[in-house]
Image (cartoon, rainbow over all chains, first blue to last red; front, side, top):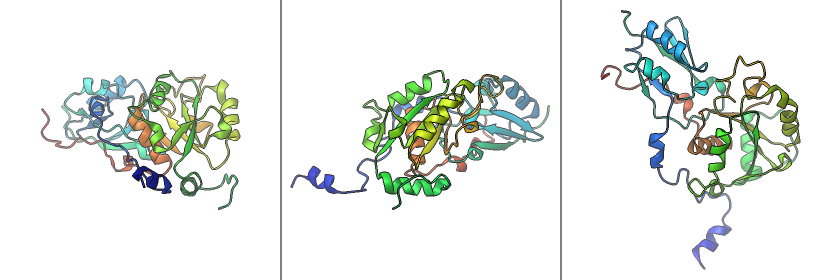
Length: 112
Length: 168
């Protein structure tokens, strides 16, 4: 019996994996930023918040609140504070709770 | 297995029932609630041979009556509320609503008077897919999360860069 026929008789068996193989184009996708807490200062964070076109960034006392769901990965915060912000490289970010997309990042940099 | 909708079922039960009732076939209805059409462009790319959505058992359908999953894009324009509710009510249960893109998640047009600003204000969203636009790979992962075939990894991410000290 040909193998494909035997495969067709199976039920509930995953025949194709996700992803089938790694996608080289994924490396060039714009991704949300990752922050370096040691380089973040309150002043730099406030400038990043002013520069952010959406509502992704906000500050509560000494923590930076980063809403990944609101981030458009435009890279403006990285332009304002290049030493404190790098691309995270994460783009598969689906979540079953909106709160899972809101991250708090401590601001540990020294004030100049 | 009991057929028929059960609106009070929790998301976890829904996912289990989808796995049982739909097996590996799930039909998607896309709903544009005022997006700039780039999300639609990425969604359309899913059917291209490069990503090949159909190999995973997902199909697009033009009718909400045939749909199991509602893929909503855009910031939910106020004029579209009735149509969005009608689409949701026309779908047979169990059903899943997936909000797609930064505007649908409430990131871009929160203070605009013409829109609700997020899909969750009108429809009960089960899965959120960030991105502006979410790439086809991100959409595939989101669909996998929606039907419980892939585990979500976002709660584990901190968005704190590794190697904190060695900034160049």
